[in-house]
Image (cartoon, rainbow, N blue to C red; front, side, top):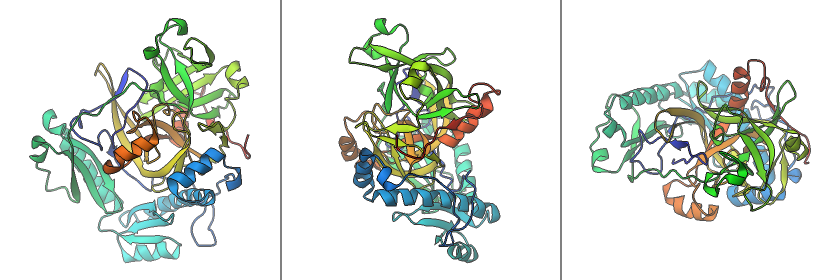
Length: 465
């Protein structure tokens, strides 16, 4: 999966390990279908554990989003909401199942028809999951076994000479087929690499060699812009363009918007955030400033907290809504965690509402500054919703629950999602990197020292605004 981050000129995705790898470059995918945080709260009539998630009704979804759901997912709005809820139930169940049977659990995901699946290594475990109302799949290796193999492989790669390691792309856990998948550049050097025979369950995919393009392109949902100096003296190619994500607040009542960390051009300096009012780049209105940004760091995240000023609040940026290209709004009703196969939709100024599914619930990307002095490891999740230039930092939802913010995609430079789908259809389709909202909330609280961002929560509502 090739991911491009933008617009910040000081950041690009690191190609240290994958400089000559094709479409799967820049993500070391580690799907962990049971990395749950939600807690079960009962049992449904079908026998599956149930979490209490408050969502809007299908009739309350905005028209732009309904169009995207039916176009991209080929399901009804009600089925979209139902699958999102079932994914959160599966997440809770898989967490408990893995804790109780660590060597018998081999993954969990939403199947193509929206039914939750639990992979197991023994018939006894399969019987338990079946009685609990889940579809089961037998697997030869447990999730913990696959993760050990992945860790062994990564250690092996880290010890290789740089020229050889550059031909090896990301390794990922394919829970559906119980194996490790690794991309190797389809080049003379790549084809000559001997993989370690002591590491089990490895499948090699040869990819066309070629450097990953890094484009200084805007990515945003509801657009905001930043400037290195005075807006009036800034040229168009110096403007940073990103997207507002989720409206939030902390225990001190601060009005905050969550966006992407790489969108802050000068972390720690309080860069001002503006909303453009016309095609004239100098005609902007300040609505806030970056109070905290993180790119990599201890939590390995890409997020920022924008402190909204009175103008931003009066403009309505403190409301619990996200918007599509057509201007229709969706009220956010809660938060969720990534589950493989769960349906998702993202908002964006460039591409509007587009929808897809979670393809990996945990991926790892390495980022670095253009001066190559520092690298940043970022954890997130991958989704198949198309993301264009202009969408970074924007909101990703499952059902009507906040799931994460957009960090980058492999379709950032495409002129449209139609064009992106045509070009990328032979290479796995569109793919975007999201940063989980729960991870952001926890990290912001942990780093706040009790001040700004402590007790950070996403603003939620119960009806469309």
